[in-house]
Length: 541
Image: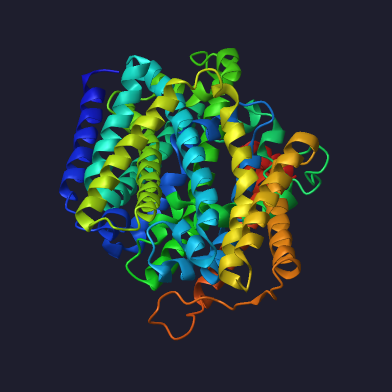
């Protein structure tokens, strides 16, 4: 890297600080955490996607596709259920949460059940999110250390301090608009990497010659996830539906963005845009992984054995070797962007949940001015906790990403079930909901420890079903209640009836069909695209 690259990085970081300064005026909790509910669907959709597309995804997912043992385009099957999850949320959870007007979505559970339900889920969210984000910062700091020549602690502080400052000053508006800018930079970075890799390969046909054909298979109908096999169609469809519905609807980092929409229609448009735009982005970085993976096999400048042993260095090594100065700086900005968008989202959401919990313990006696001050202090403390976790990531970094995914699947099903009990069923008791939540998590923990042959994506489904079953059973038998379907919720208090999202549902069902077609036909489509003219002519004969 040279002075041009460092100048680009400096301009970007200064711009983020200016953004936080520009949006620094917030007079209430709604302004700070929900952007005054004045945000449109486009920046919200980009912010939601940027939060999901972390630096780990930008670095690790292409490495999984292109070079990692057992990897390949099977990564695409993660995206299968996203449009269905968006449909599910439009009809069930998000209208009621939006109408409630709460900053912390876990407040709603206390309103419907009791404070125990709220604190159980709130504590799980805060600890798991802080831990997972800290490890992500650790991984990215190592990459920046090798690319920029910074000491590890310097890379951690650069990411953490800049992100904390603009999040602290600007609140949700600064986070959302910074995320939208960062999403554009990430997209540009992925496109540039793919274009340069394709140029140095000399064409798509070189990819098929260098990579194992098994890497091009994007779906497996034979794997059921019951006998130690992974990434099968059924677990990815049903487990993915529960996982994404819980992640986007019941995780504060995601739901807080959707609840920042200026009206119910914008909320639905945000969900629609996320269901439509996610797959093209993931497909692009998976194809980038194939192209760079093939180049690793072909190029003497990229040592195969070293990169295969540590796949996450594939993208940084490619950037430093093949991109010109200026673009190297821009790509470092893309990596910083993906790390900062995830960190800023988590800081803001952890601060929201913590501040609301403190307000509850004080009897909600805080003035709006003291509330915003407490929110900023909370955000600063959570930033320090997350950065502290990142310094202790070395001993577990090799396995922590898989561990975080598995830990998430322990909780996603039970948490989604708890929100569904609160919204969709009448007369479910607080005791039933709490026992169901604990039973769902406990059941999944048993599966992890004693049924290792079950693919962990199924835990999302088992946790959901156990929680629903126990909650309904306890409410019926112990609390003598008669749970009944409550109907669909309104998206605002002004709406006399639910505005049924039929248009969005039809569009998302079409998107699901397209995604399914691409996943099933990817191997054949890629073969057709990469056949040389000579091979095409010979095949025709």
